[in-house]
Amino acid sequence: MQLKDEVMRIEHEIMEALAKAGANKDCELRKILDEISPKNIEKMNKLLTVKDEEIAKLRDEIRIMSAHWKLKTKELESQLEKHRRADQELKKRVLKLEFCLQEARAQTRKLQRMGERRDKALKELRDQLVAKQPTISERKNFWETSSFKIIASMSMVILVIFSKR
Image (tube, rainbow, N blue to C red; front, side):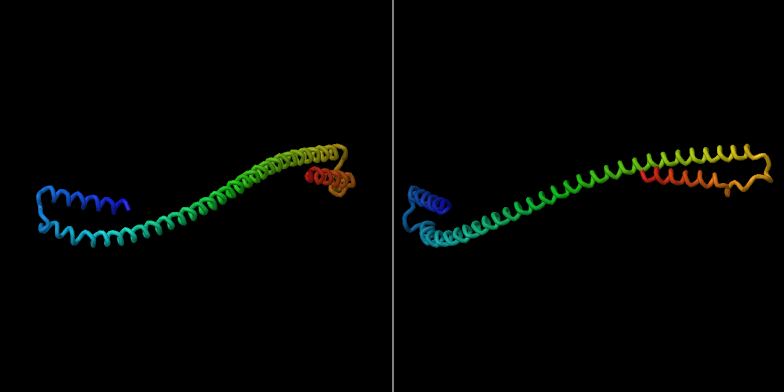
């Protein structure tokens, strides 16, 4: 509507300018303006109507696209939040696994020290047995003695108990 009013105003100014210049009604410019003006207004009205319809369609499309992108944004934000939660959960699990690994290493070192002590005690027992027996010919096979079997059995039981802890 504003464009139509503006065109009409400009045409009116042109007509006034021609009248002031002393032109009469037989002037060719005036005739052209009189012939073209109603046609132009009609064409311009049609074009403006078409353009208004195009603008309305574009506005509707923009609203639809805006709603679509808002939904997509919300979906992406929710996915991002899910990924953050999953990431935090994985970090917690990694920390727990690292703690378990450290604990397992500490127990392994403890068992190694116990094994070393057991080996040392067995060596001392062997040395004591060798010292107590006067001759090799009288001595029984060390591995077949009942005292070694008892000590070995007790050592294995103690080792199993500590390894389960």
